[in-house]
Structure formats: structure tokens, C-alpha cells
Image: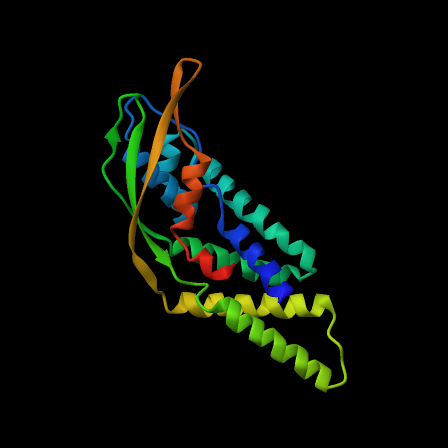
Length: 219
């Protein structure tokens, strides 16, 4: 049903936080940089990333919170309560904290960039959600009709949102991961004034993020 499809996109947006920022250091550890980025932006562990990027822990934590808040803002379209939004925020934080990965040893390339292998284990939280969710909405709508009420689109979307929240939370309570896969990201240098800074491309970042979670089951 359209409600489930529309809300699945919302969930995917919420899971796609920005995972890399610019880093600079005289003696660069590409593997350490990638791990610090991931630890900071998924597990909420800020100290190492702050050290590598010469930032304060408070600055890094603020960026992390701003990223989550900007995604949670998508819920405003569904006119839910502030309390419910906070429950979703906590849920998304829990999703990120359960991302599982291992960062391997970096290889320096001829052009000065680094290839960093990341072993990921796909978190299974959307399994069977679409098929079961559509059946849930069908049953809900039929029950409303049988009771002499015709559910509005807003009511269907609210029911779908509640279903998806409950389903994801249930799946998080019994963690399952897929088989390990390796995604290699390239950390590329560039000059900013007298400093060398390092970044990862958005294309590679997207591939890495998609390997953390079973987003294919929510489409």
C-alpha cells in the first residue's frame, strides 16, 4: 500500500546520516580516521574523531545530534506528538549503535590516497516488514470499515508509522546480522591552504552505509 511505501522512504532517510567529514593531521592514519568517523557518527563515540579533526568533543557531538534531528524533522509531515518524535529519535540512535563493522589496514595508493577495507555485517531490522505491514494495514482498514468508519489517508499513515516503529523495535531486541561483506573506501587528500585534508566520496559513503542495514527489505 502507498502508506507503507511512503513511510519506508522516511525510515531509510533516517538511517542515512552523514558519516564522514574533513580530517587533517600531520601524520595521517587512514584506517584510524575511517574507524573514528564510523564510531562517532554511528556509535556516538566522539573522542577519537575529535582528536583526529582537531575539534572539541562538544563540536563533534553537536554535529551528530544535528544530523539526527534533521532526519527526525521529516516526521513533522505526519503531525505526531513531540513525545512520539522523541521515541523515534531514540529508536534511530539505537539502530546506529547496533551497526557492526571492522576496519582493516589501509593501503597507500600511488596518488597519495588510501584504500581502506571495511568489513560490515548487515543489520536485519526491516525483514518481512513490507509484506507484513501491508497486510497489517489491510486488516486495520477492513476492521474500520466493518465498524462503519472509513479511515482517512492520515489515519492510515499514522497506523503504518506505528506499525513500522513497533516492528523495527522488536527486530532490534533480537539482533540478527547477515554474512560479512567487505566494502573498500578511498580516503583522498586535498589541499586547504597549507594543510592536507582527507575525505571520502559520497558514492563510496553511500555504498558503505547500505552495507550496514537491510534497506532492500524496506523498499
